[in-house]
Image (cartoon, rainbow, N blue to C red; front, side, top):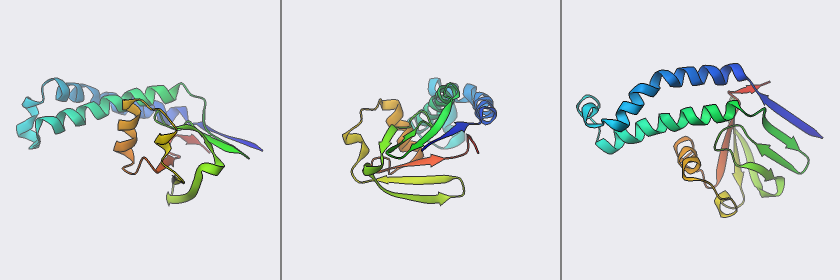
Length: 148
């Protein structure tokens, strides 16, 4: 049995357009953080981190727009391509628990930390950490961009 869940491209394009609205302020946050320190009562590093996060998030939306299939479920494995920082093929033997955490999200917990077996770039690790603080032991798959 092979089940494919595809993306809803309209929602991804809408997310890109909304993120483009925030792009100019975020670039300004990164280039001129001192100008915003008084208005947001935050340190220079926090403002740069906030600006960098949204620029990377825009990049990740553009990357998933190019993908056709979000999740593939098979008898022996599942492939998660639902986000830019998705980890790809996961064997059912590596999964400890699958739990529904909201109406549109699942948390998949692994038997051992996933980064012992996978190499990931800093940007992917950063996005995983920002969206899921327990990113070493579990992933979150959200169906927001899925066509059901």
